[in-house]
Length: 209
Ligand code: HEM
Image (cartoon, rainbow, N blue to C red):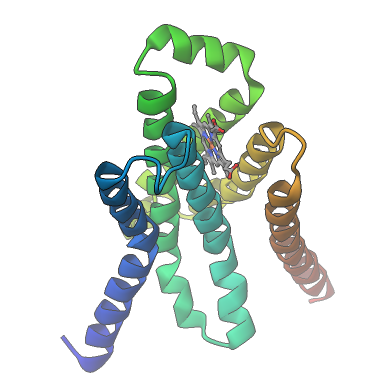
């Protein structure tokens, strides 16, 4: 292993550790809550935990979308290597958020889940986002990238639609306070706008050539 590989491995470990910090904070809060009920999660621990995990799912998802533009902005194209780690972390937070909902809010009851799925559109939309994230996580490896060739890029563009679904999910459950939905929606619009601007300028360049 050369020095550059070693540096990459350390940086990769640091990124994984950083992305795991919110989970470590949650584990610490569990510990505090057990020692002194109510101190960490307030009057409704189930809701607090599910919301906390949902917030981190959307933050890491948007951070994943920001990796490439930030790499371009800083002139450090190699930063793109960390995009997969961010994407897998976003998927993991979404899975744990969903598991939290199933266990803490739906009480592992299939009837409650089905009723929520049918009657609460924000649950339907959240689930759609999660289901769409799964194939992206599975095909995020180099092997799949090679196997799918041009279709890999097409498939992974789905991440923008997933971002939109996540924002609709948040908007639908916001109940009067739309600050977060506006913030995350605004960030997503910015990232989508940048992507669209690049796409159109490339097309124009190709046509010109
Ligand atoms: C990519 C997938 C998902 C993302 C990014 C996401 C994100 C979020 C966010 C940001 C919140 C609000 C947090 C807050 O208000 O501070 C939230 C709340 C919630 N999410 Fe999700 N979510 C996803 C998938 C799901 C799925 C699959 C379910 C269940 C089927 C679900 C169920 C819920 C529930 C029940 C709440 C509200 C908790 C409460 O206030 O009682 N989410 N989610």
